[in-house]
Length: 117
Image (cartoon, rainbow, N blue to C red; front, side):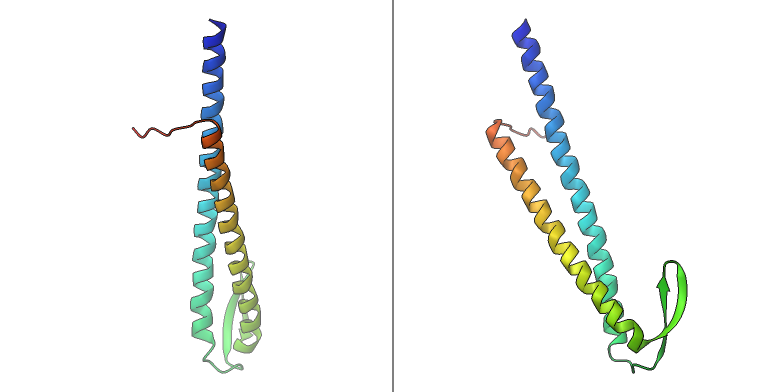
């Protein structure tokens, strides 16, 4: 009887750990999607602004406030942001792969087989 209780407890612990891995992977994937979308928006704006003269008036949203600037003022900051987003995206993808590898090692170690219903 005690062995059955211990086995059920172990199975429950494994299920919780599996759910934690899946939730973490899903959260990272969501962040990746958000950063990809923002990076694409930056790319489109950069493609639009680069051919324009540097003294041309443009508007930029900063912390919810629309401010008037010139293309020459906005481009460097926009490029810096785009580069930062690329770095964040690379880090998130690396983090996702590491967590996925950890999960696969854990599944092998605990002889976990996922059954789809």
